[in-house]
Amino acid sequence: MALELNQEVITSEPVPAATVMVLRDTNAGLEVLILQRHAASGVLGSAYVFPGGKIDPEMDTLLPTQIQPSPLDLRHRLDEPDLPLDMAGCLHSAAVRETMEECGLLLGMDGASPEQVARAKTALQQGQPMRHALDAAGWRLDVSSLHPWSRWVTPRRPSVTNRRFDTRFFVAALPPGQSAQHDGREITESTWMQPHLALQSYWHGLIDLAAPQIITLQHLARFSVTDQVMEHAACNRPRVIHPEPFEQGGHRVTCYPGDPRHSDPQPAWEGPTRLTFRNGRFEPDGGLDALLN
Image (cartoon, rainbow, N blue to C red; front, top):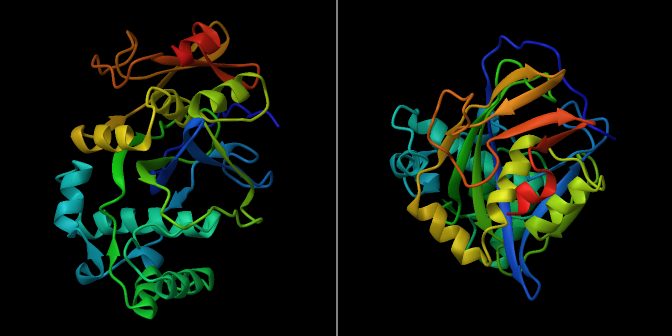
């Protein structure tokens, strides 16, 4: 099912959200976990995404003693000095919770016993807030293995959704001894793919991707192993991306930092700085080669 272009202007403020690129190393190379959303989903139905979702304060609010590093350190890692400390914790908690709910992976429990991990999973699967799941497991969430990668803020005229999100992207390695299993409700398919092969699958019409996923996969394709990605994330501030759409030649064009039409002249990545929505998908100038080179 091809994505459909949105024509609405959304005046509401963007909803805070978190998403995680879970990575693993294989003999074939670096792979990232991507999930297919249910066709009936109100956001990006049938498209492939990374695990994640919006913040739920009731589910994601933690006591400062229930998360490490400290909320102050988490805010510093996000490079958002004005972010409320409780929101810094909520963003990391939501990243962990949504990954657990959608594909069964429990991040932030490195060093926990299998019994503690099992208790935390059970509590989350039963719909308990993260703070209750941690109490049940007797564990303190350690999100130091999640590294902020980028922050995407949906423009007031979104391209393929009728909602706005303020999404923090994280990267994390596949926890040892765990395997992904999608929930079969919100998520109907899960697969590990090398980033460049995911882009090829997209270009040949085998999967649908939204623009942030395309750009992120294009960036990840430049790395060979998980450690390289983690080192890059640890040594670089997460860039804030405000896509800026405009109409040109009967098509919606979205430009990004570094593009001549964008308000920010500093490029955020190597590669295309604009995508044109045509043929039910986002296309860079230069086609697939522009994404892979």
